[in-house]
Image (spheres, rainbow, N blue to C red):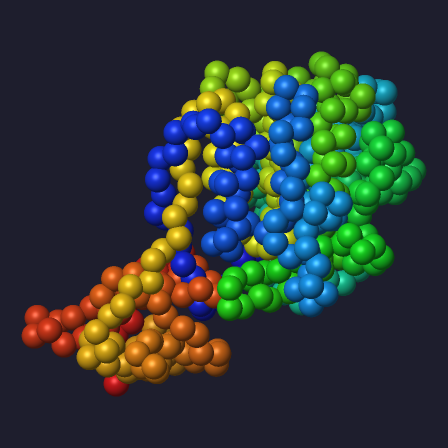
Amino acid sequence: MTRRCWLLLIVVLQFACSHPATAQSDADRINELVNAYARQYNFNGTLLVVNKGQVVISKGYGMKSVKDSTYNDVNTIYQMGSVTKQFTAALILQLEEQKKLSVKDKLSKYFPELSWADSITIENLLTHTSGIFNYTNDGRFMNAEATKPATHEKIISLFKDKPLGFTSGSKYSYSNSGYMLLGYIIEKVTGKTYEQMMHERILTPLGMTHSGFDFTHLQSPDKATGYTTYKEQLKIPGAIVDSTASYAAGALYATVNDMWAWHKGLLNNATIKAASLERAYTPFLSNYGYGWEIDSIYGKRLVQHGGGIFGFNTLFTRIPADDCCVILLCNMNTGSLEKISRGILAILNNRSYDIPKEKIVLPVDPAVLQQYAGDYELAPGFILTIRVQNNALKVRATGQPEFDLYAESEKKFFLKVVEASAEFVRGTDGTVTGLIWDQGGKKEAKKIK
């Protein structure tokens, strides 16, 4: 489950330095790395790193709830988003081991009413090769209804009448719809709810006592508040996606210690047999297996999956051969978890890694700042108004609050509320004619006043 929140207004942390191994311990180096991301508001959550079966570091960073002034720790509970998919896949494989279904079964065996079901197998659903429309791409549903309870029929109605995007098995296209159907198939086969089956077959046997699905109604002092924006000057809590709206595709919540228990259960074949797990780790198209992304690093197989849901991002990375896992649970939406994870793995393997540097705010001549004041049209009817106050720039977008702009050079400025920057442009005569706004993509804005 993923959702992008387009806010107008922060600093893109691209500056990094090569950081070779030193006399510090692995835990010290990892803490230094993660602290750098946390200081720059690119990580806020809990970290657990295990290598060779031993805990290297387990620590919380940042706030669990700004409103309550509480901080993240190893007991904080986070929504997991699409990390849920590997659990759903494991249940399917368990049922196949018991000969209650086969991944080669046609979808029509379970949903004959779907017009294209006879051309799709359970394996296509597992590997995102079904061609079924991804219901989370329905903006109206995600914006207006994802926080409300949804019946199976409601979810299926979001994609049942849409044509397949391609012939099943011929291409890869990520589809949460496929994993919702897998959850419904589990219910049809067992006669129990997906949640019941997950608790009975995986969570309870592995001792994952702080994990579950109905995050909306979870009453626990360890429950994290998710933030769609978590920056120095702006922190916006996200709504909670209802478990029925994300379900087998992304509803699981957990702690880092529960995820470590899951890692150990996989290593010990406590959930599914070794042969089944090997199939789950076998890449199909785009290096995706059964609920896992498969890669290699330092000559060893790496398996992982990330998750994104309103206010939360997570990444669960494993090198099974080393009994190694890196668990990053974050109660803010961020795109930095992959970089953090790879940096941690570099540390564990005594390789060089990068630590992001904070941007330094530079002084700019007040006379130059005055030249930047004015209105800039980013889109028809959408204006950036820039003014000078106390020898500093401020920017206000149409219909939005005003925020500070910070100089990284005489002509380029950044924000600390979202990842965005503005670079001023001059004409041949030296006058300011516009700016280039960069927020996940560059766009020119002409100075109109």
